[in-house]
Amino acid sequence: MSGRVPFAVLAAFLALLAAGAAAPAQTIDEFPVPTANSAPLGIAAGPDGNLWFVENQANQIGRITPSGVVTEFPIPTAGSLPWYITPGPDGALWFSEQLPGLGQIGRITTSGVITEFGGLTGGPPRGITAGPDGNLWFVEFSDAPFGNAIGRMTPSGVLTEFPIPTVNSNPSDIVAGPDGNLWFTEGSADNVGRISTSGVITEFPLPASGRGEDIAAGPDGNLWFTEWFAEKIGRITTAGVVTEFALPSTGNLAWGIASGPDGNLWFAEFQSSRIGQITTGGAITELAIPTSSAHPYRVCAGPDGNVWFAETGTNQIARINLAAAAPTPTPTPAAGAATPTPRPTPSPTPATLASPAPVPMLSRESLAVFAVLLAGAGLILRRSR
Image (tube, rainbow, N blue to C red; front, top):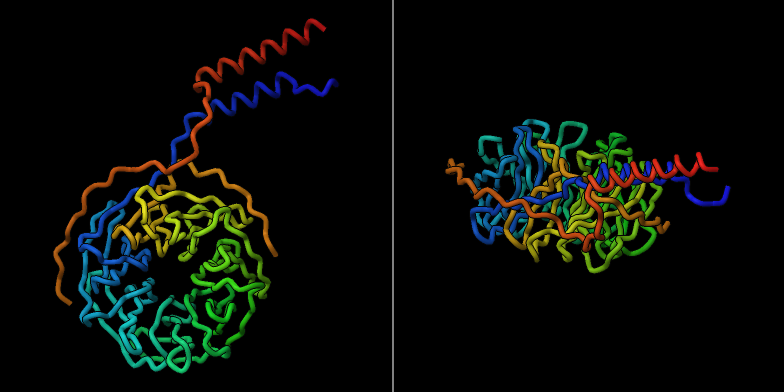
C-alpha cells in the first residue's frame, strides 16, 4: 500500500463526524437562594427527592426541588454556622454546626423539624456522613486539645469520640468506604485516615504536602479526595495505595468532591470558579461556571440524574445538566421549628458552558454528502486500477 488513507475509511470517519456535529452543549442552571448573602456551603440529596443545603451565614437549612423551588428552615440556635449536610440512616438529614465553642450536630426531617445535639468535647464538627453501622460519623477538625477527633452519634443522639493518633491533624471530611470502614482526610497532617465502626484508626501518608480536603467513595471501589494546596485529585485504594492526578490549570483550590450519576467524580474549584470532572482513569475536564466569582464549595449527585453544587460567592444553587452532551476529557497523567413559607425562585435561563472558539465546520448535511461523494470517488478509483 502507498500509506495513503483509504477513501472508504475517510468516508466512514466523516460520516461519524457528521452524526455528532449537532450534539447539544452541556448547560448549567443557577437558582438564587431567597435570603441574600446566605453563603450556601454543604449540599446533599435527600430521601424525599429534593436537594438540601446549609446557609452558613443565614443560619438556615435550605431545600430545593429539582425544578428549582427553594424553601428555607431557620435553625433554632442563633449563629450556629451550619457547614456540611448528609442524608441519615433514619430518613432525616443531619448537619454539622460550627457554633463558636465545641459545636453541635443538627437533624432536620424532610418536613422541616429540627433537633440539635450538643455534648461534643473534641471540637467543632465539619464533614459528616452516615456510616454502615446505622450511625452518623463526623470529624472534629480543630487542633488538639480542642479537636482532632472522629465523632460517632446514634440517631438518638448518643455520642462517642475517638482521638486521632496524629496530633493537630485537622480532619476535614469523612465518608463511608466500600470496605465497611469510614475514611477521612487530615489536612494539616497530610494523611488519609481510616476508622472502623469500632473506632480503630489507621493513617496513610500522602506523597507530598497537599492538604487533603473533601473525600468521596468512587464508583471504582476506591476513595477519591481533593488536595487544594497541591492542586491535585487523589485516589486511595482500601489497601492504602495513593495515586495523584494534577489539575490541568492552576489557582483552583479544589474543594468538594462527589461521585456523579455518570460514573465519574465531580469536584468544585473554589478559587477559579470552575467545576471539574475526573474519570476513574484520571482524565480531567474543567467546566467554567456561567456566573463569575461563583466560588463553588460542595458537590453532590442529584435525584434527577444531574450534578448539583452550592455557589458560595453568588448565593446560588446550581445544576449541571448531564442529559446534555458530556465534555471531551483531557487525559492527565498520574504523578505517582417554625414552619416556613415556601418561596419559589425564578426559573433560570440555561447558560451554555464556556468553551474554546469553534473550528469552522461543515453542517451535518454537508458532511454527510461529502462522505458519500468520497466513498463514490474511492469506488471509481478502485475500478480504474
